[in-house]
Image (cartoon, rainbow, N blue to C red; front, side):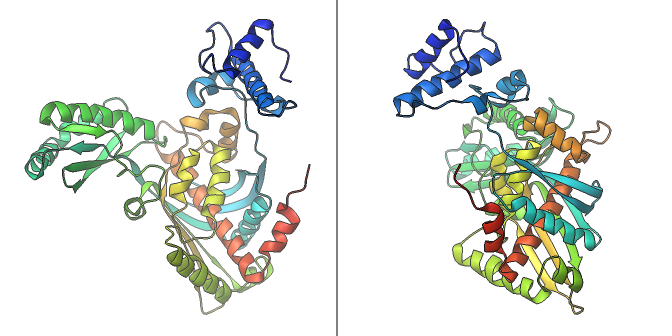
Length: 420
């Protein structure tokens, strides 16, 4: 069972398990460790009623993070941690504007063979002089949705927004020197008006910043125009969902990474050739994705992003957006291949959210990621450049494995689960 609890704490756990007390309704005099222990014990009691009387949550209970911070800033009803193995890939050679050098990349994953695959891609990139990476800071978006009485009121509403954009900008930016409104893009469907606000947010991913700023603007618009806001997010943002508008306009960071691999590196490191890579790209990533109606024309962006995001404290749900990118392979006359990845929608951060947790902060520091007040946004761009190069490494390795029929063998050796 859980570590021994006092009678009073055991009673609290019983009340939660029986539904007589909510998970968050614990006495304020309990410290974070006691609260977490009560919740774990309640889960054990409930599991026993479901038929598993031997469940213990001892692994969940052991952690090194700052429980006080995590329970107030990152996770409600805190009970412990979910531990995920972390490996290193590299050295990854990056030739970016912020990230220029060699990096060992921390990757947190439960998928056997993933780190080994990315590591092989890193070797191929290093032998080719490094990945050239560039990042555009597209900005974070939020799009409240309004309801008018029809076309004429919609025109008056949008006219007011256009005429008072400077006032809107001043109001939106007043709480943060890092928040800068870039533009407001409307979309109209019948009596529905959506306003897509786009901000740059320094080194933060910025979702909370732009949400709070848009709430202030919404209050102003309702007061001055009489048009009602139906929801602060109208899904034209688009947050944590694949979408054509984000594919076209970008969101967060737009990342481009490329490398040219010579014939020898292709043959010795990746066990493939330029023509085979181009063939798999065309028939798998392009025609296969088109046939499926997919919005990602790549092999495994989501795999790489998820492992990086867990390790480095990013918002995991943004993997959905980041996975929409496009991979390209172009054979050259000398037997080399030009390889590139494009990620139009990659919301990443160097500060805020999960980046402040101990493990994730260490992982970012291992990459040399640290915010500089004199250069706001530079740390997030540096991380985005490393993200792009790592995604490129993953694509190179997995696509090569398809051409050499090594995919199943790698998973047989490295990723096949064994019964405990």
